[in-house]
Image (cartoon, rainbow, N blue to C red; front, top):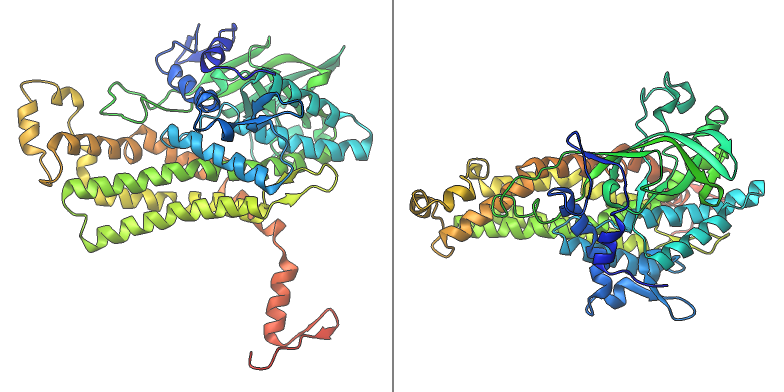
Length: 491
């Protein structure tokens, strides 16, 4: 086993992969002016393993004493989940609220497959769990980056996969082949698609028997023949003052297209067992929604700090309604932390594999809470900052000797804050909540890692309704399990 350096990670991406950005083929994602921002952000996962201050958190050891990434550790206790959650949080804080995502999402998928594959094996006699663990050992040994590749393009949402006019609108097995299977289709919104080593592909929903060919899970290198990656254009514009976050950290999503791609048998973890497609998607969500809350916490911290800075720069930090908004932002941030941690403390143990996964009710609640309240957080920051965040001149005007003295004079705010600092703070607010990056976060906060509706459904499905009902029956003086509940005197 060997931990890779950040530079070894970057070099591993120079492998002939087929990537397009704004209509142009990208020869080297590590030097592309936009994609390299995402590459450098992903490299933070590798930097954390090298940094003496974070190495103990980022690295674990095998039974023989060899080091590997904590993300590839099978979680066998709540403590394992808590440390993993903290590692997600730490990487996100380095990247200004963006998770590095070299390993976070993909390892969520690996953990989910490990549990569901074992149950599939027990039910039908397959050998998927053995293959999965062999693949996990390979990840540990090679220190690969891996991207979760789950969301299908879906076509007509009212129709099941097998009912679509075009059969390729969900990823499917086209046919069996010697030593593996051939797959076709596309997966959308795939974070780090252009600069990951591996794709870990999962079903996106529950399936029926008619959807058997769509019930596939597998892993495949990003440069495998037949894979094409079309990146989204990003919120990147020139200037590290005008766009201080977007130009320094990012995630880049892509549409990943599989054109009759061969998947070796040892990399196939589900192949037609349609009954397990839904459980695999749901188990992945148990892990991934807590990962989402873990990385969102540092971004919420950033919103709190930015709101306070702009209030001070404008001289309104003592105004009552401004203090109320900042206090609400603090509660928003710390509640995200509390819910995501609690989901790990109250982790559930799969009886067959012994692996732990975050409590589904609290985990879904943590993601729902930050997503459902995110636009309120944005509104608070925008309200405190004022309209100048969308009318502020550019850093190019500040750097122009003819206009800089005018900006210095007329953009002054509180006497406690220099005009130049206020200028930079205003641009930070703009980048976070009033730019293309701000719009990206508003949409992805709702839809990434599962929609609000999906989280409500999952919460209801996993809620201990018997406990809730019995509490109400006791309060009403009703009979529970054949006996009347006795209430202690004085209560």
